[in-house]
Length: 368
View 1 (spheres, rainbow, N blue to C red):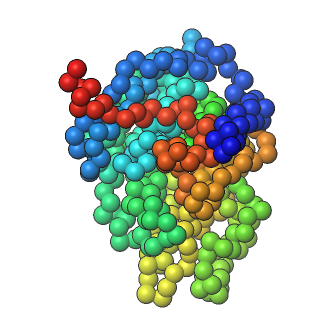
View 2 (view 1 turned 180 degrees about the vertical axis):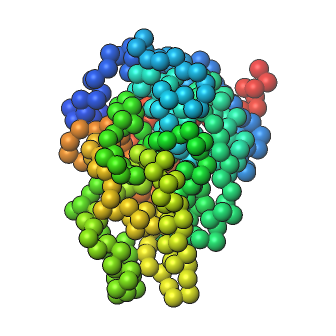
View 3 (view 1 turned 30 degrees about the vertical axis):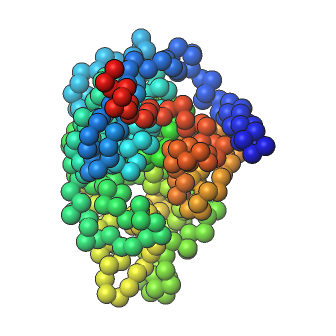
């Protein structure tokens, strides 16, 4: 009976997606879903990324630009490119690959999307090239020591990883000719063309993101913060709203001119000072301190977040009302982990079609 209920839930989730999201019906099928057949398996035997053994991913299906798209030049400074930044690490690698796959599957001009991968292990770039032979990308090494002394403990260990803070340094890491970038977390998939998000009018703001002004903003900061008039005054003459930093459109030119990296670092230094903590939840609060109240609002369809269970292990969430362009498994429950454990949530069925992970061949199969 439990199995039947889960299957029913998967079908219900899929039908709900079709009903709620016109984006799924906005492209001709030949353009939106290019192929369900994979060319071959890409296997990575031996030790990879600090200890993972026998990793195997299927090679992504080929993708091509539609007729109206500009021909990509391969130059990162090409003004016709759409730039996306995403991290690659061993723990979230399966999610990152699925996120990339979802982007190219739904883009009308997938060859014109340029990925900027932030890594602490440069060898992961070889894996990306094998899985996505056509992909335009560059790998950027992010030195963990750059932020190790600034990171404070959080509610989940994953939020304390140095690579989680690489988004703070995009303006420094990426080429000066890259004036705008879409930052995406590794635990999400797109079901719409990323160019729509890319073209968001920021109205002179540095950051664009879906805002959630009904959220309890005060809970992200400690009593010490709110009891100190100087700290609490940070939000004076601002209407601060919560926004999730896993999906952002960033004006890097404005970021560089204003020096926002240093402003974020300064709040992290205060957090680590002997006087005590001023916030919780890792890398999010410094972004709120610098940008909340000055964010260009983006439609909520671009971040259906919280699908990971809101930090409660094993809990399942439903979609928020309204159309859907991006599904985000923020929280502790990741779809690849739940699927692998045979305990998926219904909405995990919407992530699964973009999963390119496959078990490595056994030694016996390899000798045939």
